[in-house]
Image 1 (cartoon, rainbow, N blue to C red):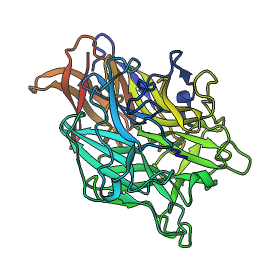
Image 2 (spheres, rainbow, N blue to C red):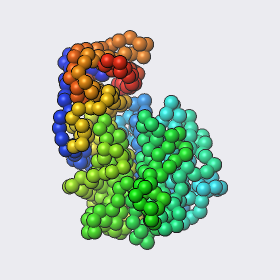
Image 3 (cartoon, helix red, strand yellow):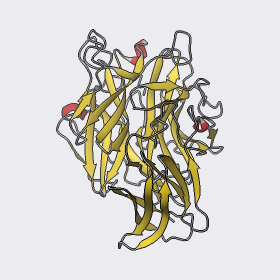
Length: 443
């Protein structure tokens, strides 16, 4: 059994970040009435009985959803295909799917599943769960493949980039990639793992690994825990208290970085055969997570997914969260659904300092964007501050800030209706500090 500005040209609006607590506007999810958005293939096709995960990215105005498929999960291995959409709802599957499958040798000889895509400098990167042999359980390794186009050909590494832990460790049985984020200092991966097979009731939790190059990874290891099952590494999201909705599994997550910290949707169940639902958590550092007190926030829909929901990926576009998730209407039957919620504010944290300790300029959020985005920066002392936007040729297209500011953190909501689509740069200058970042406007 397999589990698995953008510019506010007429008016500039300044919002001081002075709220406390954690914003949980992202918990008010509305399922799409036409779910599922990725359905079974035609009878006899490679994905006729299993369409799962649907991890989606937005690139050059197109939604790309990578998913795992199989004609019959009990008898056939999973492979990976993709579908595209102009609106994030109506998807068209690539006609020559699958684009990645087991290659009959090595760590991914039998199946590939759980795709996690990235795009960097026009190169596609795909992390995936893999197994060398049939087992009826998730695989023990994570692979990495690259391509110049999502249709391939994909070049995979000769060996896994991350594997299960030693016997007796919390991640000894399987390891599945859930989210990979490229940060200023490298890469962060969140993965699901367990000490034993899920079909035997072993608890599944979420771990984290970091990498400088996206190839060589180091699992998070709390130095305070030196005995099994946490001698070699530690989960960063653990099970809920006995009797709670996530007491048996807390796994299968999608994570993204905000201007102040991190957010997560994850899946939980009190035991491995109970209804699986989706919850929400926040973190200031990506390691220590606070679960939303009113979890779970999304439950199975009897009309098409009556058993489990697994969080897969989030795309933020036009001030809206698009949450893609896997819905099960049986232990071996899965399809991909969509739920949305408005982005009404950025994640705030109670331990955010009132006075910044240094100059900082954050990546605009969301990015890419279509009509509006937010630019946020911090200054530790009073002084003259300028924030300007330039086009790709270096021409200044707007001065957002030019004046004396006191110490603090500032946030501008900006509108780009009068700008052409393309790449722009915004530059903050305050005293001897100067920093430039790129933003992408879509039309």
